Amino acid sequence: MALADGVNRAMRRVPIGPLYVSAFAPAAWWLWLAVGNRLGADPVATLEHSLGLTALQFLVGALAVTPLRDVTGVSLLRFRRMLGLMAFWYAAMHVAVWVSLDRQFDWARITADLFKRPYIIVGMAAFLMLLPLAATSFDAAVRRMGPVAWRRLHRLAYAAGLLAAAHFIWLVKAWPPEPLIYGAVMVALVGWRLLPRTRRTRRPVATG
Amino acid sequence: MLIKTIPRLRPSDVTPRAAWMGRREMMTGIAGLAAATLAPGRGRAAGITGRPSPFSTDDAPTAIEHVTGYNNFYEFGTAKEDPARNAHTLTTTPWSVVVDGLVANPGTYALEDLYSTDSLEERIYRLRCVEGWSMVIPWVGFPLAEILDRADPDASAKYVAFETLVRPEEMPAQRGLFQPLDWPYVEGLRLDEAMHPLTIMAVGLYGEELPNQNGAPLRLVVPWKYGFKSIKSVVRITLTEEQPPTTWNTLQPREFGFYSNVNPAVDHPRWSQADERVVGEGLLAGRRETELFNGYADEVAGLYAGMDLTKFF
Image (tube, each protein chain N blue to C red):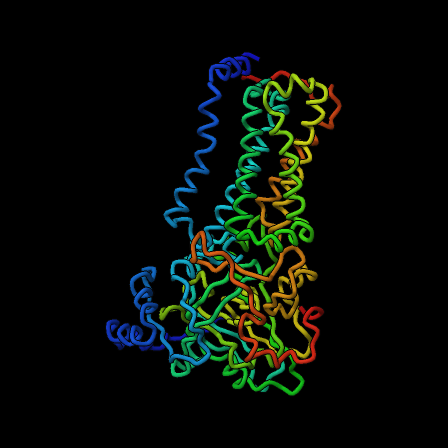
């Protein structure tokens, strides 16, 4: 495990604060392009889709931390809170763009969509599940809830991940590969947790 | 089967570009100017112009970079930018079209023999995509009825079936593991829809030859139906008695009907069709209310008199 240990040692020296800042860089860049009307033919859709896709990617990252440690011994646990929170923030911006720029605060149609459109229902459900996770992400909340209750609550991330992937698959026409790949990855990451603990404990990595 | 022909002289071969561009500018003002400045220099930008048509909308045409850069043409990939990126591989000369089925005069036509340049009109049409966005596009084309009249449909002919080219070596999404649709892409119209004067075969766009990503060299345009009905790069037109299979309807029958008339009151099962984002209007433009038959109700509503548009969606 020399390699994994080396990676872990190096990772411990990475400061978290700047990572938060850089994780917002894509959003800032798109906003910059949007203000200059350089987001292409359908800028609202581009912005909306980019934010949603990034949220999904951070969610994949957060859910990959444990399987990655189980399989390779590399622990990114220090970064998991950041990954999860960024998933939440990008999902929040995604929803905000949908409500404001896309739906123009047309509450009648927003409400209708929230009740009638399965892909919007599961997408909103995924976002709502991230809310309590973000709200209990700081250290004091973990202390106050106790580790057992906190961990139980944060299993919502699995459901949020699956619903977010379903949301993506559900909104496209035909079967383009990208949403299917995200769906498969999400199923694998959540399915990993269902394996018996003995099957998924850390095993040695080949170094040669 | 492809029939080799000597390309017929186009008006642009004998008319100085400045002269016909001048005519265009008079006709379409700013739009023509924009086309001249922005038309992608792909090397074969031969002009194709047509008479102005009373069927044209007064709405301002969508910028050419969006019309030619934001496309659904799944043979070249499923992303909107894919067709513009990949369609340059398509060879469109020579091009022949089979007209067959229940007609007195079946035949295989070289593209040049399919229409007369005298019959070309500029039709500025709204286009509404089933996905919920729209554009305004200055097509150059001729009525499909001209092809059908010449073919002389039998009395038993009730439908017209269309087929897109299958050429995997030039259409990347027709080869490989992930193929989004079954090929060939097929579409269909009822004969009266096909004969309607609004229904055209387009060969040009913004006063130039149709770019590959827009369905070169010959595509259907049916402005009151969702965009996917307007099949691209057509190689076969077949008159049938039975309603022909159509690609999206075959893939997801509950979601995409044979008729697929634009109708704000009939939602797609997964999303609303009540409104649309107008392409090129920017970040703050909001949505436009979608109109029944995409605003062409005065012209085409009669085709569907007495029909339940919710059932025949």
